Length: 203
Image (cartoon, rainbow, N blue to C red):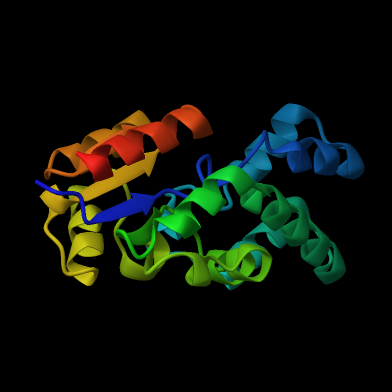
């Protein structure tokens, strides 16, 4: 079946995201051992509820402040560091390619995310102008690799799963999409992804 829409992941695909170096900087700043720091931050969102909207940005700020005994200005600094890491660096080549896909096909984003991600990524990269729709996991209460989030993304673009492709750098997320019929592309390099998507569209 003809591919009519392509969905892209953000972190690791549209954004290049490196190791969380902010953790080491803050550990040293606070004079904590690695084990002390890790133990503190592991309690910030132990059940991973932020990803499906069960843990707000305000709650995250408060939790970091308590866990690390930070003043309000220090929490501001820490959260700025967290978002700078989270948003990474734009893959300009891939974003240029995505921009050129329309109107040949519809485009979308499906991202596992946390409260505040839309604001931060829109401010930096204007993703709403890049694609037709964005599905953030924390806004819809569903997260990859659940097939339900891909079904929702397709529904919002009025297409069948078999008419869509997904580009993601996590094998489990690719597998989840493939289970309901999406053409799944495991992102390993920008050039390879562009070739793979072109092949699907031109098939």
